[in-house]
Amino acid sequence: MNIRPDNLYMRSFVLAGVLCLLAAGSSLAASLTLPGPTLLYDIGGWNDSGMQFTALADVRLVSFTFENQGAADTIWLLDDSSNILQTYSAPAGDPMHTVVVNWPLSNGRTYRLISDDPSNGRWVSYSSFPTANAHLSVQGVWSESNQKLYTSWWFTFTDLTTSDDSVVPEPSSVVLSGLGLAALACMRKRRRA
Image (cartoon, rainbow, N blue to C red; front, side, top):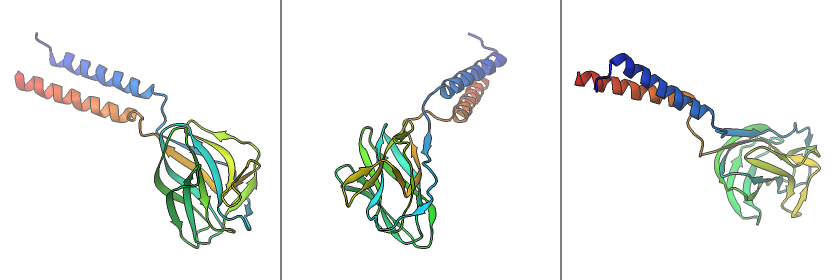
């Protein structure tokens, strides 16, 4: 079978285009952020408190904003039995900063993101629970010391960002891969000729 080089180029670009469309049509999102409300007031006396949420997919918590009053603090990721899964030591002197982590979350499990210091967080009245996206569903404020869930406030943590490890590649990556394969096919054909 004798294929002309211009036909080979055309077939390669069509293949790359099809791959690109398949990738772009995927409904999976690489990362999602659950923003939460603006926190307006300083917490006083609420130790071991933070957000309770449930993972709606197998994802990773990759970052969150810790809105605090500037004191050093310890942040825990707990399961719903209060087992410490992960910890982060927040430095003093930074009243609000983004914490970058790589903490796995399992589909259907409930977690608590907790700040240890009793007077370091921030809060706002907030009754729109549950707040959710495709990765997380927030149930409310969890008080570890009281072992109680409150649904009329939002405490300390905003911009919970998760990443789905099972996503397809970006469309641009697929296009570049397709173009690379097309170039290899052309080079192979020229060598044969």
